[in-house]
Length: 336
Image (tube, rainbow, N blue to C red):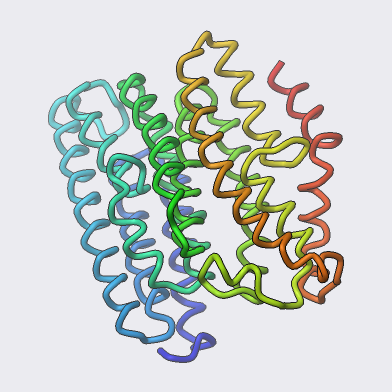
């Protein structure tokens, strides 16, 4: 499958979307598990889109980890059924720990994030984008159905935010930086998963809106290494800088709006220590985001050069820059 326009790729992408939608639309743990398996079996051929040895190795690692988490998930679901005689309820504390850990492993959250960086540095940017966004949708939805273990989810949230930030500090590979950044953002999403699902979804959508143009521009114009950001190319540096700083959560950009709304909700819930740890993780990650921005600012001669790639994302980039005046008042109106 060396050709990325191979006709069967459309089939695999369709089955991948179908598997996720099957998990999202079900209230039955067995059919959710079936949806995750459909998603996994269609995503593996997409990881081998260029037919390289490194991709085959990455897809094998991904298959083993996802199979392990799926096995624990179905085992936990069967134990829950034996205990409750129902596939729909979540009332056994011991079993929910099993299901929770299997879903965190599937998501790549700390402290079970070890497998994610080792496979992301070997895949293309388009598949990396799918792995960091679409593949997290169904497990996040399933996590929101767990009624127990609030404290454990908060600990995983803090660990993900801190580990994702600390591990990215000495990285020079852009794919690894984006992967650890994704783990850090996952911590923010998980902090609200049991309190307000809508805000988790809002954060997730904002992350996708920022990631689409950023990963495409890095893929089309820049290489995989951090120093390549200083190379002469046709990219509009100010656009990429704005997207990177948005991921960092600097005001008045879209990423800041997401973090601010979650912080307001956590403070209203009197979760001050959790808020402090999340902010600490964001401050650490700000270092490597600013490092990337500085690399781009070095080549100031092409700061305002326009490019045809930018035109495809004008609406998303405008939304990113104008979110303070458009999105924030609307969301605050709904959560208050």
